[in-house]
Amino acid sequence: MTKQDSIFPRGQKLPTEWFTGDAFLHLLVTKDKNHEFSAGAVTFEPGARTHWHTHPKGQALIVIEGQGFYQEKGAEARVIKKGDVVNIPENSVHWHGASATSKMVHIAITNYKDDVQVTWLNPVTDEEFEKVNHL
Amino acid sequence: MTKQDSIFPRGQKLPTEWFTGDAFLHLLVTKDKNHEFSAGAVTFEPGARTHWHTHPKGQALIVIEGQGFYQEKGAEARVIKKGDVVNIPENSVHWHGASATSKMVHIAITNYKDDVQVTWLNPVTDEEFEKVNHL
Image 1 (cartoon, each protein chain N blue to C red):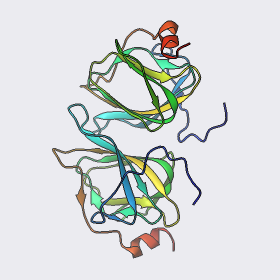
Image 2: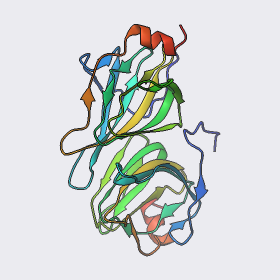
Image 3: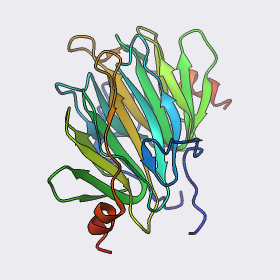
Image 4: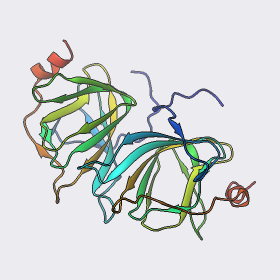
């Protein structure tokens, strides 16, 4: 990969309990008396992705670098790239991440329902990931 | 100016009723049943800035390109640049914008209090703007 002039530091590595591969979080905005969400820049190195998961009150993704995928359970994966926005509905089983060959960075704005932002499910298997990458 | 590989299109010109100079909005996320905010990328060409204003439930700014200023009434202006985040409290009189010589692009995440996001006040005068630019 060529050196890139990323906007944000890569931040903290995200736990393998919920992410496959090398994914990182740089926190930008935390929930407070005004914000009913948190926001962070998530960097997915090539091949990295979330596990399948849901958000009880939805999430917005704003892709700021590279490209990758967003897939809702039972639907075709959507290629998402720099400049794209994804509005993820509540309780929809989905995953997002880099492609096999490209890094992706997105800002995630994640709403809270009471104190819950996310429910984690199974990993996206290599077979599932290879299928959307047409490998 | 050199050509820049901006993430988002520049979008719609913002009205001179509330902005000085050439400022533009590319809307990213609108309020809906999940999001209690809207989010947009705001481009300020050099010299462009908001009028003084307040937000009834605060706003978060995430600077993604260039540099400019954020100033709360009665306080020194703060230089803000690519990668910086500003958490603007509710009902604080403030402005933000480019510097005299540099463009700035920020994502603004603006909360709603009932149906209100912003109350507009007076323009930032040329004298006020020149002072923070040390012109």
